[in-house]
Amino acid sequence: MHKALCDMLERLLTSDQQTLASMLTPQVPGPGTLVTVKKGREGFVTMEPLTAEQCPPITLGSWYRPLRYCWIGPDFHIAHYTALLLQVQTE
Image (cartoon, rainbow, N blue to C red):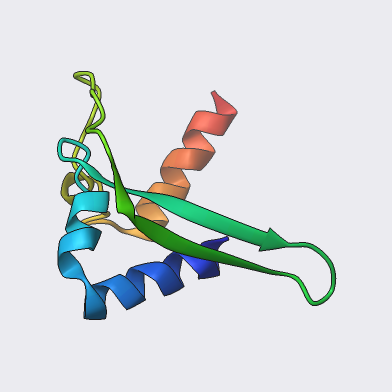
């Protein structure tokens, strides 16, 4: 699923940035996504935007934070994070 999502995003980034932007912006209409799964050893997962049909915007609550504010910033240090996790687990 992760690979299918990354593949779709990479394709849209080079071929259709407007569709990509609408998919990543909940306040505007955008396409739904078709997910195809084939089980088994030769199985696969693909994802494609359904650009023919636009889905309405999503109503978000005050909890919503735009993705650009959710990234781990340059001040993140894995050692500090790990120490904090250990502290929380022991409490």
